[in-house]
Length: 66
Image 1: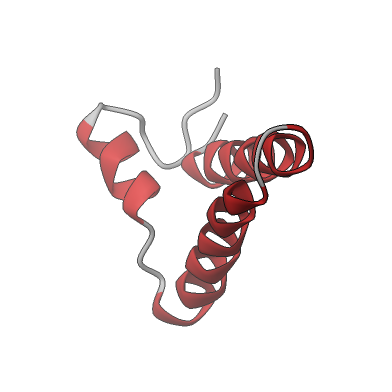
Image 2: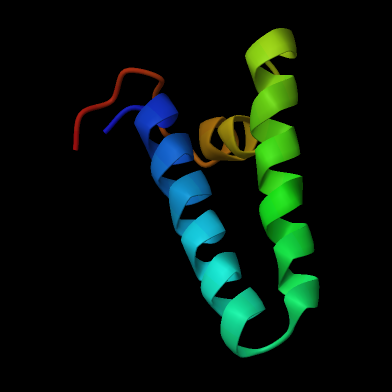
């Protein structure tokens, strides 16, 4: 799996989990959803993604296939 797909899968998972937590635990969890959305939005313009940097440091190659 490539870094791009890992980032998208991670972002989607965090959004779904934070939505569930926002509904069942506390509405303050919706701030996490907003943060992920804002990060994806800024990443589309700047090309900078903190998770991609972390994955590269962990040794995941950009075009790696798992």
